[in-house]
Image (tube, rainbow, N blue to C red):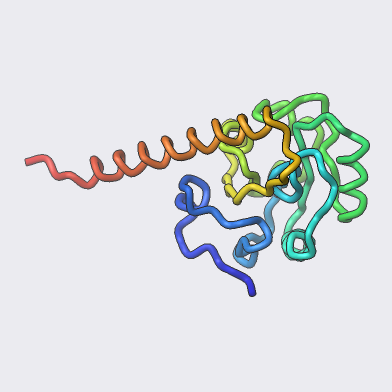
Length: 181
């Protein structure tokens, strides 16, 4: 059963109501260049296992878009192996999100299409999308019981930032709707 994100794009990427990548409604995403985060988005941190549902969602995206894999983890061997297994290109660069220099690892022709960043973290994926003028789709994080404490702390901080941004956006929208007399 495929769950569709029923809220607007802003709600999908900003608030706590995010869906796992495998349940993301990929049908409206067409003719775009997608940078798909690996760790926490399609696999648990530093792992290589990918669920059948995630594989299906990746295939659905790749059928209608140019999809690149990228990870801030510097395990290039694992990252390239995942990309090869999935039939996708890997952005091979020494730079890390949110640096704009990550785009240097992509062919120019794919930089002219609408860009979408799909990831689990506001502080890296979301900020990267903002810095390059791309749309950001935040998905629920893929977790593992073996995630290190430092990774769990980073996830906690990212969740707090996402929560605060959601509340600030709600307050801003309420202020926008007030009429001045």
